[in-house]
Image (cartoon, rainbow, N blue to C red; front, side, top):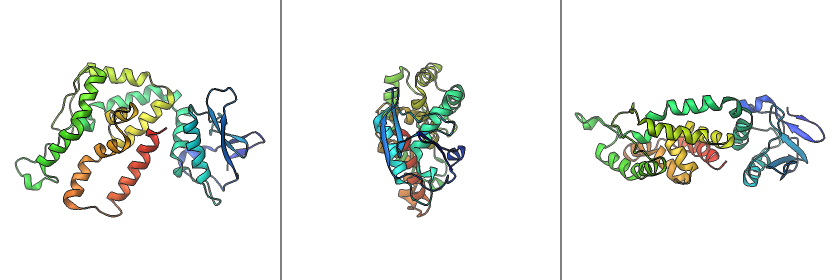
Amino acid sequence: MSSRDSTSVTMPMSFMTGSVVGKRFYKEVTTRLADDSNGWSVMLDFRTLKTPTKRTLKLPTLSLAKAIAAEWEYQQEDGIRPFSMPLMELACTALERVPLTRTKIIENLMKKFNQDLVFCRYPGDKKNPSKSLVDIDLFTERQVEKIDPLLEWVESEFGFKPIVYSSFFGGKQEDGLANAVQSFLNKLDDCELAAIDAMAASSHSLIISIGTFCGRLQIQEAIELIRLEEDAQVDRWGLVEGGHDVDIAGLKAQFSSAAVS
């Protein structure tokens, strides 16, 4: 259960693991300006909501505070379910984990940078095209149509043209581009870095995540790019109910919650 006093509510550490943390103990959820007038707080029955380490959950924007308040309002009487509160979890991560692990987060993002899915063109099996999961020519056309405009934006934004490889293992991008992207990450605040990291984890693409963060891609456009190969396979072989549809729903929930935070 959460700990409560007359002025605040502190979530238990189990909140960050996804475990049900007890029955709903509050009736009303509201938002208000933080005590220092720098950010916004979420209130449960006039108690200020705190993170598992007893830090006030202070949000940078009113819209984010209201979105998290809506997650709390959605909770049912029989239990508070953290897995249904992605924005609350992301906010706790930004406040508690990112300040301590910024360097490691950025290192991990950059380790995967050269294998970003937008740098890879589907090679297929040109010797035995009948064995390919998707039609090579059609899928390559889709990649050119959907991904090339994003790569052009990357060149414009960071000053270096991305190198495209016909290998699932990717290849090394120019140091100039990698350094420019890392510099971009270094300048993000903790909330922004947490959002980028969460988007990259669900999309397997730092470039798509940055493009969405910067407004170059709308969320639905980003989802289409992430699922480009899977959707091509669905077009050819059909949708597997209870498989593809669940994956799509999960991706939309994870990526969208991070994108709007």
